[in-house]
Image (tube, rainbow, N blue to C red; front, side):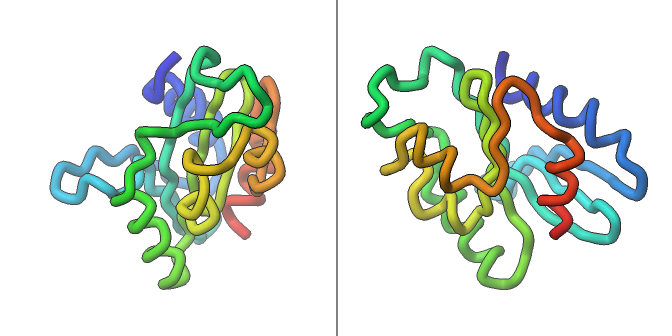
Length: 142
């Protein structure tokens, strides 16, 4: 699986939601902008997708879950957008676990200091095996 496969899983589920539009963004002009822009029930937001294969998950519970491809520029974008009142999220798939983090929360520590257990505790949504798409919809539109 890859980030592209992760997006295909997401899009095949969320595009069924009424009153929604989803756009995968590949922006060469603004490289740090998130991967997905959405509107659901008149609520807009952005989602940065991150994928880690099972082999990237540390064996020791005390080790940091590294997300090296979550860049400083992306972290700044997330903090800035959140400070302006915008919805921005990081949706991480790590092995068979799924985590949804508010961007301003993820920008502080995701991939830098959090263990896998910290990710479970700090996420707005956490699912093992499969995403609860109805719960995800509620979180994205709060």
